[in-house]
Length: 258
Image (cartoon, rainbow, N blue to C red):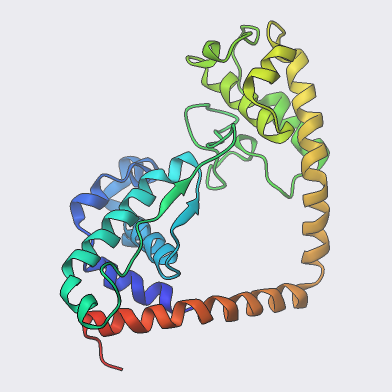
């Protein structure tokens, strides 16, 4: 769907460098090598805004770590609406062309952290495979990673407040709660006061139970690339049906020809 890249360029002319300089994810990923980071990494939040607004989405399910990017999306949409307000009205496209999308953040594990450092997000780009659970991991790999996950020497607290200064404990409890479909309070009712020697095997067993069907389905699909290609093609066709009229209106608003 070419409209993603095309709309991103329009938004590059709307967004401000100061807005992008505030993006904490870029700072985390670039680290000390900021000057060597690619423009694509720096500008990625603008492409994300295009991904959302190309479909006039008004609600977006995101993790807690993506909330700032959605705030940027709202800023871009608002500035576009303000900058082109007269033209939008002239074309009969209403008072505001782009909606201001709201984040939908639900569940007890809105941000899953690294198994090796509870202060960092779990990421497939982390050099250590032990830092994350991959959907392709088998039962032995999952059990090993949880067994080796960083913890502290204290037993689990009996109340959620006791997790505040314990990022690794909070992360593992959050993962268990999300997989079990329980609030953290219920998890601590069962495991509060017990050590990680009791908790980790239970977490590993639950994780394997929940991810095994996903793992099996991934393997099945990967053995049928033709089916995957068909799904992607059908999805692209449905997406284009929504995106192309919106992109056509954007071109009329900003004055592009053709």
